Amino acid sequence: MSEIELIAAGFGGQGIMVIGEIIAASAVQENKFATFLPSYGPAMRGGTANCIVVVSDSEIGSPVLSEHKNAIIMNIPSFEKFEPTLIKGGNILVNSSLINNKSKRTDINAYYIPANDIANQAGANVAANIVMLGSFLKVTNFASYDTVCSMVKERFKTKGEKIVNINLKALELGYNYIWSLK
Image 1 (cartoon, rainbow, N blue to C red):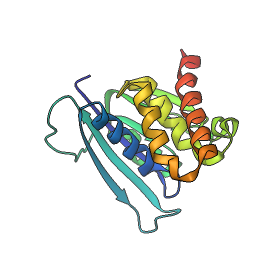
Image 2: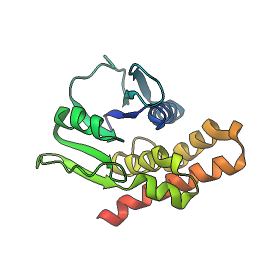
Image 3: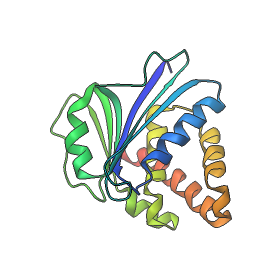
Image 4: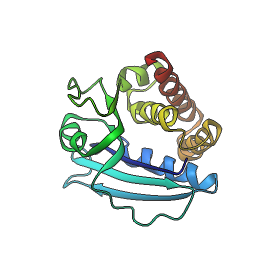
């Protein structure tokens, strides 16, 4: 890995910032450099939200990006806004539970993950963001699986063991879902 850049986007309340926080924390835990730049729309819950995360083996010049190597997209407005910003060869991970749109681009790698449906299998629809995190981990290897599990446990520990276990299951299911696409 040299540098992994991500834009994660969706509605407020979909856990977009949690994705970015866990990625950045996982990178730091592995002695990598990381930046996390959140952006909120006019209303936190239900409005748009996105964050840019950069993970690198060396110092990061700027967390601000106009083009993206990777995107996690949780809703249609975010798909329409950020799909065109992916660079050639980039990866887009789309929550196909909520987005029927397919990329017309042939120069990017598109992964359609029914994140809400998978999260229901884990025990909670709201863990769709962690399903997407697991899929993103499999696609990019931004950190080790064990490190990300540790950061998920840390992030949700105050919510109780049941919530921690649901999110760990969501991470595992998202990670393994990418295998099923090969």
